[in-house]
Length: 393
Ligand SMILES: Cc1ncc(COP(=O)(O)O)c(C=O)c1O
Image 1 (spheres, helix red, strand yellow):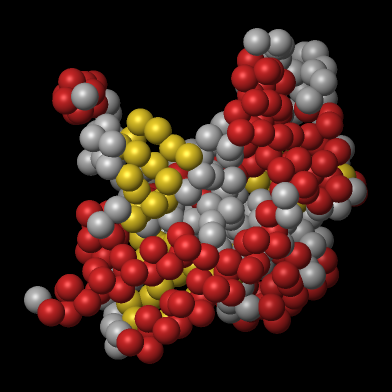
Image 2: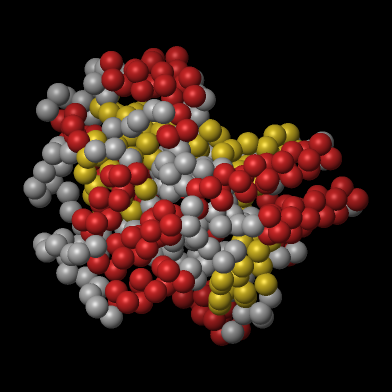
């Protein structure tokens, strides 16, 4: 396997610096090339919510791959309309556009809002400080985290960032040219920051009042991650359009945005397109995922394990003064420290637990939604041990 590491270093554009080489996964566990076992509380950045190598998804993909992989959107396929129907049943009456990633789903939503505003001279989109919407040029302009935008100037014009959870700041930024407000109901990359319920309700009212589209980016917080199918369902605040990706295919690349019936015909014939979006294969994977969600009561497990994990983390907070806060929803959880948390991610990794960081001082946990009490106990032991080791140094 040392040849793989050599090839990686020699032939990859160095936008990442991975150190581990994984060869196999099952459920919440991964094995590297030395057959070392890891507990995965990162889920491939919130993607493998049903765990690795889920048999129902694997079976659906392998059957479809030898039946029909791709025909383009110039033709119908048996899976795409069925998947759209399922997503509509989980959200609101309207239409679905399929893409291949989170950034592409958001690009589509941004185009939807721009097209809606175009006849009225509206094109400005307001997004939140610390938000993350993707790495394409429009989604980068939408992204509030300045560090991701640096070096890619000039940014696409028309995007304005305001502090999250601050309704007065949003009011001040609205102009007659505003066509949309885009929000992650629970910010992911920004540090696992949930929207305040009053704030989200006030944003909805403001958007309706000013004929502004409310767009939710649920690429990370959607698909059951917070314990409801969409995060907005906690708040009872419906968007005009919502994007999804990450866990939709449990690792098979697929993204989508769903738009309310009222706005379904804004993107009409020929105004938006994709070669790969919504292939029979990608939709077979996502259909299998949604069937597992419905049949295996994934949301119930997410909620139960969330309560258990939050309880364990609160106990850790009592034990260690450097833990400032435990926040998030469902199994999208941030442990907020009084200093950057990268050291802890590195230490838990050495002990066989994969975690993520977010924002500046946050250790982010995104375990598969099928996680068990025992797996949570094991993860907590590793985190506890890592913090204790640092304290004793
Ligand atoms: C909230 C949010 N939106 C968009 C994206 C971009 O998704 P992708 O990496 O699939 O383009 C991400 C990725 O982390 C995300 O967390």
